[in-house]
Length: 68
Image 1: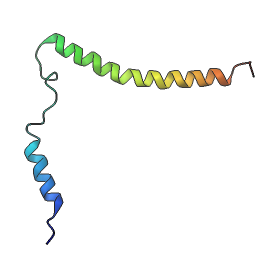
Image 2: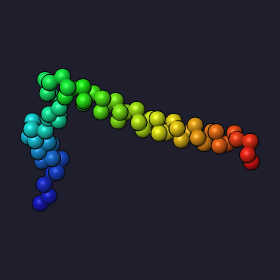
Image 3: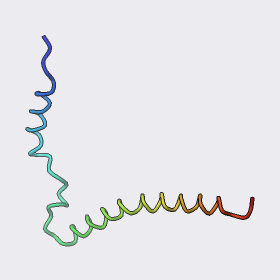
Image 4: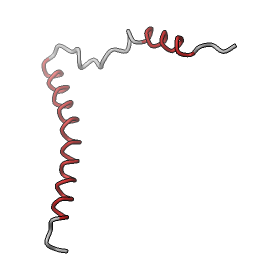
């Protein structure tokens, strides 16, 4: 006899989700910890965008260069 896996998985997720809160920095009342979290989130958002933008700019400059 096969047991249905979806209800078992759903019940496990519901039981474990109460202990799986976000990182402790998110709920830390200290201002310096919150600012560090904010700046790291900003850096993780901006750096990949800047890298892709830099690559596109480099490819555009290389395509439009007069040294062909």
